[in-house]
Length: 285
Image (cartoon, rainbow, N blue to C red; front, side, top):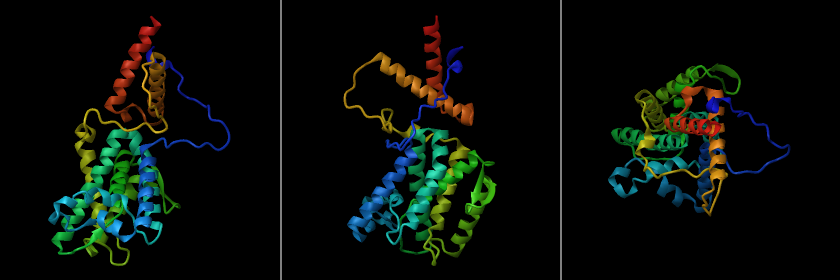
């Protein structure tokens, strides 16, 4: 029988307002970006200048960190920039995170930000333009395109009104970025949009999906992300507690199978199910 005869639908939510730690890495990325935006407001233009991506950053190799930090900055002239970027990340990122797993998702997002920044820098230098860029749009474009590649027939509402399959929305967005980049490789003069960064993120998502890359393999073996909502300063070996954690993890994986099918599981999740199944069978004997 194994683990597949276990109940995993739980309805133990209590009525009322509940305050808890964020449950997904996507939410954590949104909160971190909002926190950085707060730092921008506090420290002003100097802070923004240091951590924005300058098109000639390669002339000052010690500023290579800008290839990552620019993705957590947003325009201080209004909240529209950060609001729409974080809304898109929250909207599409959760499914991508569930599809690929926490570690892989974080690696994908951060590498996409860097890749988009490099593409933008190349086009800027090729056109002899000196500029600075900020915003998470390159990484978010990568998340959006990867979502479309995995769920092409998922129905979405363009402008919150027009229903269409996700593949069509992705084509429209990429087409608009291509037209914008043809007008200005660095930015649209009216809206200050870094179209080439968007296209860089989209290209990275396509290469990642088609190549079947596993970015988490590049991470150190002992690297792990903090589990949202779970903190422990004292580590005590407790077999019952370990069993409970395994059960909780199995419940999460089974719920994922119910919603997205077995093909959505990562290699690590399959291993967890195999080990748990053997353990349950051993206890039944």
